[in-house]
Figure 1 (cartoon, rainbow, N blue to C red):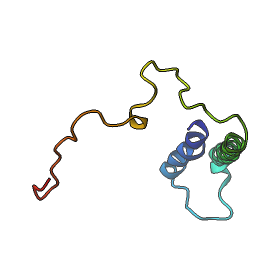
Figure 2: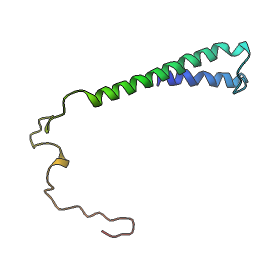
Figure 3: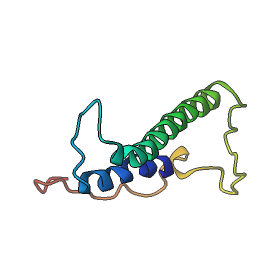
Figure 4: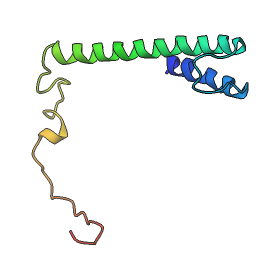
Length: 97
């Protein structure tokens, strides 16, 4: 989030200063804010590469979780147990059950 804001927030100042958009060459009065925006954009790109690396590492590595990793007294998560009570009566939009 920090690099995203560093990349795009200075562009608000550039727009207020009437910098034209989509120009290959621009006046030197806009150089400082464009440099700040460029540094933020590179940092934002690097943070996305870091995110992809962490996701791939998490998928490939590490032991699988046990059936009851929290050591719950009742045997685990509620969706892994059989339903003990009656099914709740739920009506759809037309009023049918």
